[in-house]
Length: 95
View (cartoon, rainbow, N blue to C red):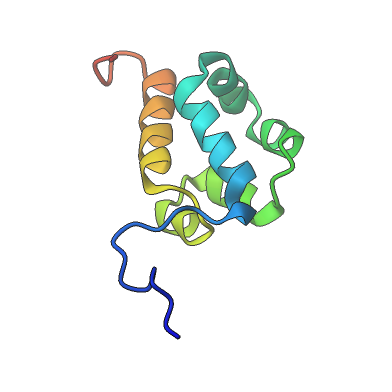
């Protein structure tokens, strides 16, 4: 029997990527967390229990690698945007 999700346009993130997606959600939504991440990404991501590979991909904000690990593409996009807004005030209009 074939997997019904094989042809699906959208796949839910796998449970193994929960911590990674939780981190991306916090980057997108929590200004204090974003500031802590910018100040010390290693300590912030270790505290969440992320793997070494996940932490490396987050440090580079490597979209393709993060999505391959199960990160939701929207969360990656929004986390990158929020990090840019926080690290370069005035570069983007805040919304």
